[in-house]
Image (cartoon, rainbow, N blue to C red; front, side, top):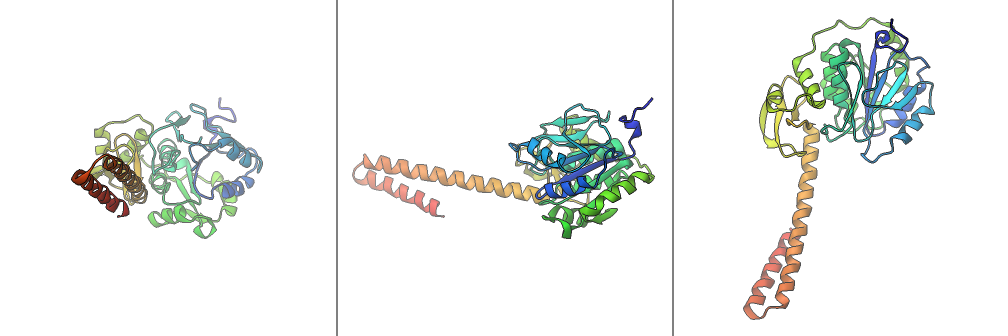
Length: 322
């Protein structure tokens, strides 16, 4: 017989994604939830790899009655518990409805990333998922929210005028028509309403969503699995240097390599810009070193040889100035 914490008693599963400015809206949301909330809640908050996850958790646990804890690999989901992704680890849901906490490839430049959680929840729970996008930069979470919607789940987006950093909510609103768009202060009441309602009609899980979820979980890691998703494009993955494929059947422009890195167009451009800047600074350092070496060599030369070496040093300075 099912106990009060078994999966059979779950009415819904809530997954939340947020980035910059996410702590305050999460506090506002948790404050609205009463003890015994009738669903598990999983949260991905973009944090730096060396962030102190306990500090973030302590701030949430001081707010309300719901228990907030750091996700542990292999743990069983329990209703009334809020699980937060560990810094530098993805958080996903396995097919047996346990937690996956793993250092897989970054998606959208982040680990943890929102899309892997949303996608895995959509595959496992389908129309039982409530997905929420809160404040943040760029567009992580949009593709995952689309996956939730395609699998029959409920999509909630924070009103951009209510978000400290509205990029993520605006991105979601530009690519899909959510079920609800409202301020965080009204989401708690909505959660309780949704938990009492019947779920949307269950639909078959699209194969491309299953494949991407398996890639993120490291179940699939080969060229043939990525080729199912789209067509190869003539540029490389900034994360590993491998080939990229453009994902088809998706309103967003997204790319993925077979090792697991994934990018939206915006995050790919941002990553390329960062790599270009790194390359430029490396080139300038090498020109500076070359100039210094040539000057050093010229000190021990005489006549024409010294003059030619100094001219090469001057040419290096031209490149440095450029």
